[in-house]
Image 1 (cartoon, rainbow, N blue to C red):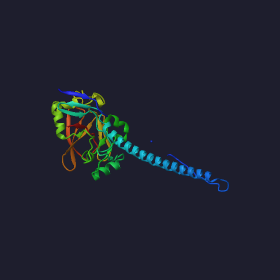
Image 2 (spheres, helix red, strand yellow):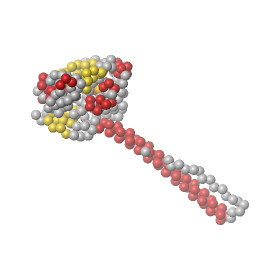
Image 3 (spheres, rainbow, N blue to C red):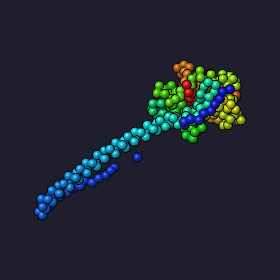
Image 4 (cartoon, one colour):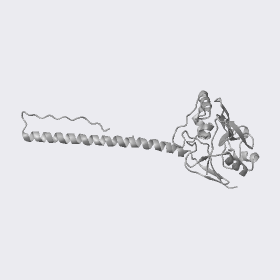
Length: 266
């Protein structure tokens, strides 16, 4: 079995107005000339200072723009924590954990049940952490509804693509079919009641649970679910799941549901 794990990528000048006065009563023409010359130099200095300020502001604007761009790119790439080759496929070894689409647009976070339901009913993308706890994202990634998965702005980071039903079928077949693949995909820890897997494949499938249509969170520690990019029909899409057994399942779930996402390189 050909399995190889490779690690990759996962800031004013202030100035005062200087005014000069000329003493006409006692000053000579030479003194007056010198005073005028000094005033001219002062105005020139002020002009230079204003020029420096303009350049400084321009540099600050460019710096902020660069920072914003770098932040977006950093988030987009920082999730590439590693890959694993399983047969001829290269999978990410962690669930997706991004809050922006590939083009930099933000994906709305839906914390409350009301927000989650509203997003689903309107067919709009949304994400959340399990139980709205950011700490869970470190291990399980984020949960997305299928409208985020299917958004044309692209949920997968640069260099990745979303796994489709055919990708999952190829993975499962390579690992011995539905009955045997589950144990080989499950992590060696984190599963309740001793139902850990062997992780022979290197997939590291954690039981991250999911969020149902009404906004409730269910089954962390006992079930892991992953969207495919493949639509089944108007209300549902194909997903795959690991549970307490050694098998891996496939189902058609409502697009409003919140599930994990695992990317693949092609």
